Image (tube, rainbow, N blue to C red; front, side, top):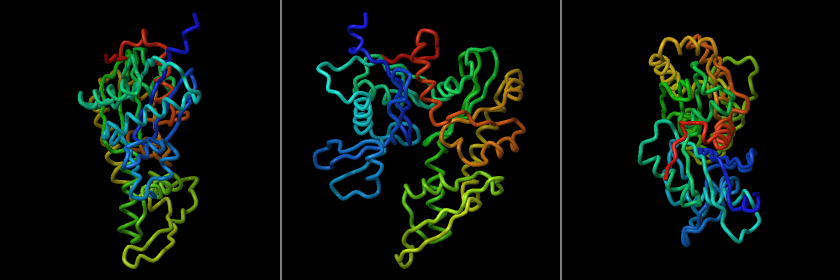
Length: 342
């Protein structure tokens, strides 16, 4: 029975704007940044993932680094296909005589249009997928954090990724009401870049802004356990001479306030649409925060203060969607919300 198992592989892919995770045999075997480096003259792939990220912003004219996904959807079809194919190859380094037949469960934002869904499906097929199933990201995140999505009870999840924030109320194996907004980690990063340019007259790249967000990113200007200031180095906009500036978490909380307020508004809009019985369940159970944005210092406290509903951070929020996709992959017959694209 297991003789031809090597010809059939089942993988779950969390195709994220910032990071792509691939789950195989119940293990996350690939966890790489969603970025690819391509040779401009030949169009061939030079590097993907972390190696390509290290090249980002440091390339010469013959090399181009591309982030194939923007706002949670595929922006560059050719680059996304190369990236998915390359990351699938990372699962097994040994050469195969025969390409395996892939059964793939892949995540999509809940606000995806038909065109965006088709782009994801086509990319997965061109990368070797024979059977492609799609699952909405908030549903995958809810499964991944251990919520019983089939129960007759309301559960709310907020998944703050790189390109989109997914907010959904789930009950009886379906999404009752949801909102997908294109305000997420990438917007926080660009807010920091703009703030440093206007406030400190210093030019910084995407990677430096990302480091600032990780080290001193905060949603509240008053934290119980504040991080140390982060030293930023770069050229002064007027003189082009190098300068060093310490950045505090209070400054970053101030510069991210506008974007976080938009996330708050979207959460309140979904709560307004929630049926009363499910609202009562959410009030009792609390709201789960998943995705990389859930790690923003003080965000859970800020949202709790705003809504009077308890917000809590999922265990390992970065991998919640990937884990949920893996569980869905093993229970394809059980979950009716899995949509097969053929």
